[in-house]
Structures are given as C-alpha cells and as structure tokens.
Image 1 (tube, rainbow, N blue to C red):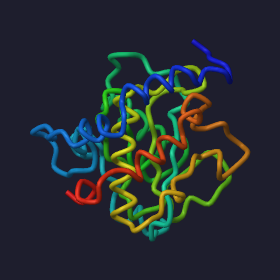
Image 2 (cartoon, rainbow, N blue to C red; image 1 turned 120 degrees about the vertical axis):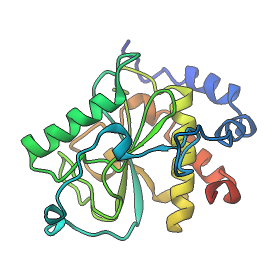
Image 3 (tube, rainbow, N blue to C red; image 1 turned 30 degrees about the horizontal axis):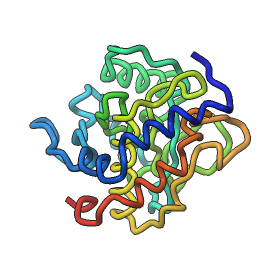
Length: 217
C-alpha cells in the first residue's frame, strides 16, 4: 500500500514500542549457530553461504580499493514478497550485475532482510557500484530489501540495520553523521524511499546508541 507524507504515526508507534532499551536488548541477542561474524543481531550470512560465485582475482585489478569514510543506506527499490528466497534473489542480482552492468559483483556490501538477517555482499575493501551518478569510493553500501516508496521496513529490519550501522561506525571510527541516505548523494533517486526516510534520523540515533562493547563483540 502506498502511503503519503503524513504516514509518520505508524513509525512513532514502532519506535515507542521498541524503546532504546528494548531495541538494544533485542540486538544483543545471541547469534544463531550459522553466524561467523557478529555484524548483526542475526549474525552475518557470508557470501559463500548464499551461493555467491567469487569473481576471479584479476577482475579486481581495475577496481578502486577504498578506505571507509561513510555509510550509505539504500532500499532494493522492488516490492519484497513475504517468504521470498533471499539467497536466490542475491544470486540473480549477482548474475545481472555481471551480465548487464559489467560490475564485478553485487553493488552492495551488506544486505538486510525483513526478518533481520544480514547478508554479506561485495568485499568491503572494494568500492560499490551505482546506477546513479555519485562517487561511491569510501562508502560502505548497506541495502534493505523492499521498496520503501510502497512498503515499510519491518521492525526487525530496522533493528538489525541500526546495530549493523553502529558496529560499522565503531569499526571504522566514524561519527553518526557519516551515515547518509543514497538520496543525500544525488538528486537522481528517491532511494531509500519515503517510508525509510521518515525514520532515518531515528535509525541514525539508534546506530549511535549501540553500546561500544556490543559494537566490538
């Protein structure tokens, strides 16, 4: 369902129900057995685990090695259907990226699913790619599955994204204002969608509130 500019009330209810204490308690929950890195409340699902085909080493020779200076938040831009297979989607995205765009890999470094699971994408040491005209060098690209012009990100998705962003801030020594939306870099897009922009400042604040010890676990 498409929601207009006056749809912020549902978000007030979401954040009220999930206070800072509650959210951080959820985010600190133990990761499942498959997790190998503590980069989200559900653990990081590696590229190998979702079936990524690694690019040949030579493919990176012309790529831009990056020192991280910021975090950019995106939405998928396609309506996400409940129960859809995330791994299968990522494999298709990787194939499309290489075949249609001649990109070395998926354009994003991290992908956050509606259930709060976080998937590894492109190797973070290499700059991402974009269909829009802005310099991606130095930016870690974090994408939430869904079209947030038409859908709302789920509470689990927001909570996982907040912790992921908080951990990335700590890992790279960044201030919270280094978290930016895709649309902050260029006027060519509405990404990450109006429904996410309604709570973007809250998301940034939640990331900044992740305890330092929890960020570094």
